[in-house]
Image (cartoon, rainbow, N blue to C red; front, top):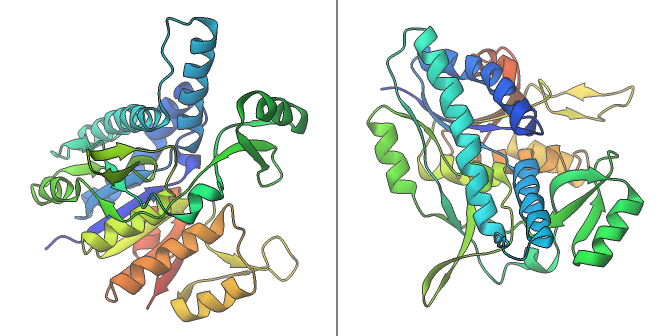
Length: 311
């Protein structure tokens, strides 16, 4: 039986504009198709922070310039980002499959994820989206729009929105059916479109769910063998960027928790990835989670690189 892998692609695999993305996903497709050739069943998730912010900003500017142009609600911006990122990934993976003589199809599922409307995250927005601004620009936009901005990893200021916990993946049965039928599936893009359950059915809300947490939820629900979070570095490290930096090869969730308590991992970058891996391994004791770089995905599966997290 083929092993099921859920892969979460970081922002470095997608770029910051549609033009960049169209080129970058061609490189992204290569290690993914290599895994398919080795017999793995893939479900691919991806971030959408820059993309959903870009779409939201474009619709705002268009609306301000013409009252006849409608303002697109934020959940719909999330759905649009899933569609166009999925389209680019589908195209690149399809071409790479064809180049390698692999007869498989790839499909994107526009995915909703239920969140709790009482989640404390709605009172404390933390998820950066969109482009970077300098301090003066951010203050001006805050004043005119009511948005909240924070300094993000020393690179400038970005708008932040709520990042509630994923509770339920609405289209999980569809995703599982497609995987069982042998298709490569792109799903839960951007962490999924956040929706709440109301008396009138599902309702979209202004938020971005952390894509790594949603990937962990997806992997656990599907009883996947591996959750692989692909990022810009080969391994998780403690004492990062210090003379005594140490890369982590294989580690238990208990030891990782000790490092979290020591504040070893940055909140805006590595911490959510580590926590997502821990959530998956707690839910699926037989599974393993791996954090590795995109280009070394195949080597990470073989245990040759990356950080392996186990129960």
